[in-house]
Amino acid sequence: MAPGDPILGLTEAFVADTRPGKINLGVGIYCDEQGKIPLMKAVRDVDQALARAENPRGYLPINGLKAYNELTQQLLFGADSPLLAEGRVATAQTIGGSAALRVAADLLKQTAGAGAKVAISNPSWGNHHVVFRTAGFELLEYRYYDKETHGLDFAGMLEDLGKLEPGTVVLLHACCHNPTGVDLDAAQWQQAIELMKERQLLPFVDAAYQGFDKGLDADATAIRLLAASGIEAFVVANSYSKSFSLYGERVGAISMVGRDRDEAARVLSRIKTTIRSIYSSPAAHGAYLVAGVLGDPALRASWEEELGGMRTRIHEMRAGLVDGLAAAGLPQFDFINRQAGMFSYSGLSKAQVERLREDFAIYALTSGRICVAALNRSNLDAVVAAIAAVS
Ligand code: LMR
Figure 1 (spheres, helix red, strand yellow):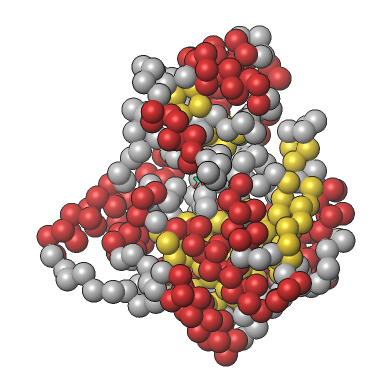
Figure 2: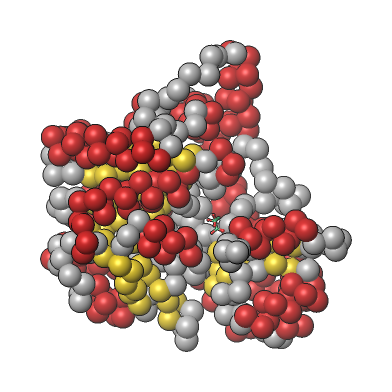
């Protein structure tokens, strides 16, 4: 038997739990005030129009829907990006952000051969290790999270990046770092990017939460600074699971930046052979939904507004948790307000997390990661009381 997945396996246990009032703060899913996964209005409108159109269900091209790829590039790099005008970005729709990571990892491994190395933040999303290890990479770690301050160990990060061999892939989180919620600011990104350029490292940005912290453009700061840095090659994997609330549609993309238009064309040809060898071509429906929203100014405005509302609600829930814990005599959790996105690395120990599950039917990851986007005004008090009881 293989061990269960630390995140999705926990959801299986949550579903099987028959206790009323159970709360899932494990998996990274945004739930609304009613505790439901929202169907965004703009997505619903496109979905209904698609149902009425009764289109035939042909294959998409290997690299997916053209409009989806172009709109994705604009969202990530900015509509006026010189990289796009120069044709330097090869983008392919993928089956969620996970396939984007895996396709790129397989492709980079083919190029790097036996010496392929990737440096991953300590800690990181558990599946990063699984994907790169399975693709044949040697895994390295760079310091990232400072347990004492619950913030960034930037000096440690720079020191570790500075020791990497040229050509090493450096996996970075664009924003809303998973699992810590601790991000670099623009000045820190600039410094890290200069170092990666000097050391000839290959930046690989995982962008799964664009729009969940400050806004669509602000949350793409790392990508925009990389684009402006003069670094010739870098990679961006992105996911729309969260920002479009389309988890099960598996909508993501891989974008690989090359030195010039010719190199980007060669890279795209390699992306396509890699995809063909794994799943032939991506699923269509989610891509039609995302492209339908992003390509229509009114629907896009509606989506951006609703996304903004989700962002605000997450900030409110963070503040509510911090205030509630302070009122329960635990002011030391105020760092949760300084973290960004869906997650907080709460500092709760494995034993405390186990007690939350066993005694209170509250599910969190054993690392102490909690999904603050699953909090609402109805479950907040129960979560505060349970954390206070185990603290
Ligand atoms: C998470 O970190 O909870 C999400 O990204 C879902 C997943 O696939 O692990």
